[in-house]
Amino acid sequence: MYFTHAITRLPADSVAHGLTTASLGAPDPALTRQQFREYIDILLQLGLTVTTLPALPDYPDAHFVEDVAVLMPELAIITNPGAPSRRGEIHSIAPLVSRFRHAVWLGEGARMDGGDVLMVDKRFFIGLSSRTNEAGISQFAAAVEKFGYSVQAVPVGAGLHLKSIVNYVGRNTLILSEDTVNNPAFSGFAQIVLSPQEEYAGNTLWINDTLITPSGYPHTLRQLQALGLPIIQTDTSEIRKMDGGLTCLSLRF
Ligand code: CIR
Image 1 (cartoon, rainbow, N blue to C red):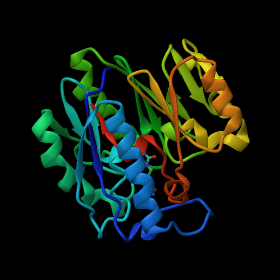
Image 2 (cartoon, rainbow, N blue to C red):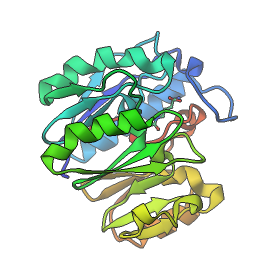
Image 3 (spheres, rainbow, N blue to C red):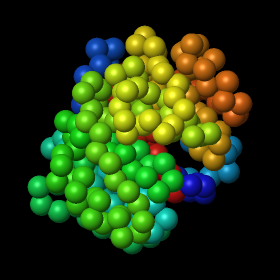
């Protein structure tokens, strides 16, 4: 899929009040915004048109826009985030998403975070996680299969979301955690296996055959370099403190 647009949201001053399992201390709001701006600059440098929504101080995780919608050429799914504190975020993203795509809302009982949805061409791998349930996956499948997409559920043991541990990095290659390597769902791909110490770098973002990867993960960087694609490194120290990464800061389409 070739991306021309991205939707993002400015991090609020309340960022430190969001959800996290990381024990890395509280993020600095000003540094969070600086790292966010550097991220936007990279998207612009790659030629994307970027729409940035205003901060939502009552929703300190709302700049992780990836979790509230999934966009594909034919439609957009408005998810139903698994964490109760995040459910209200969908109402402020849906009007913008609806300007670009026909929006389908997940219904009663469905739970899904977009961070669990990995799209590779016409295939969706969806993490069955603490945020995404079977009803979410089956409602998603019912909406997209008529457009020729396949949907495969992948249980997520460790990690918040599927894309915390598995991402597509171009050239028919996935970057993935040691725990995920033997999953038959991923057997048709070449694989870059993350060392446990560098698992966070698995949240590398592929945009139109350029890779954006968090700085500070030298072993993973060397493995990515072997793919021969351009690589941009950027500091995500504050984003990481709130369990966030590079994929979660934007919706690409
Ligand atoms: C949360 O726990 O929901 C946020 N603090 C982090 C969400 C990260 N989203 C993502 O990886 N797609």
